[in-house]
Length: 124
Image (cartoon, rainbow, N blue to C red; front, side, top):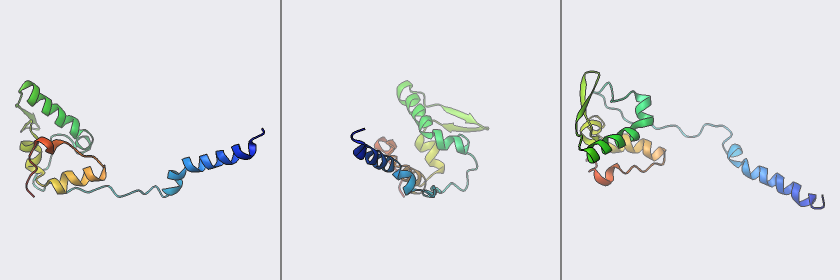
């Protein structure tokens, strides 16, 4: 190995550079997840809490496709309660504050939803 004087320090620098995120955040604490303001009068959502956190965008996209592409503006029943396929008439009926509910999690996750490109944001 004629270039071992360059290769070995280069490999050491490469390994240190690649492992910077591990050394930088050794505690593993990260930042505290947001605690959005939940509606006080509603006990249940259209899905269980863990499922709605993970899958709400898929649900909203399915509703959007049903309403816009097939014209199905129907309702669905969950635990004896009827809900419309609508962001404004279902979700925003309970979650009245976009800033306190939607924006806290979306800002934390660095997500920019496009809901408000078509829908009018609720007045705060």
